Image (spheres, rainbow, N blue to C red):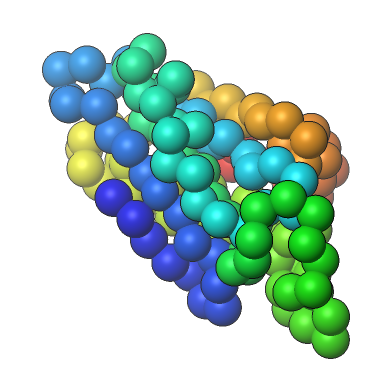
Length: 132
């Protein structure tokens, strides 16, 4: 399923069939300057029974190192810097728990390039909250 959180936080959530769900959640953070949703990034977790989500980093742009989207757009810069990961995770977890009718037992987060920064920002900003 695909979703959207204002202003430009797009995501794709893939859920295994209920009998295959291991009660785990995996967020795959986008790479480079993001800008697109690569739903295939969810497949590795999905194949292992995880509810898996990925996003576009809070903006639409060509994939790679095109930073034009950030010019004069502080709200998009904030989304890219930390907010997109957080809000997408919160929404995707709520959808997952509602769909299965059970709480998520464990959550994981990973990714390449921007993924490392995203993991650290989430841990630093929300150390007491198990969000990703």
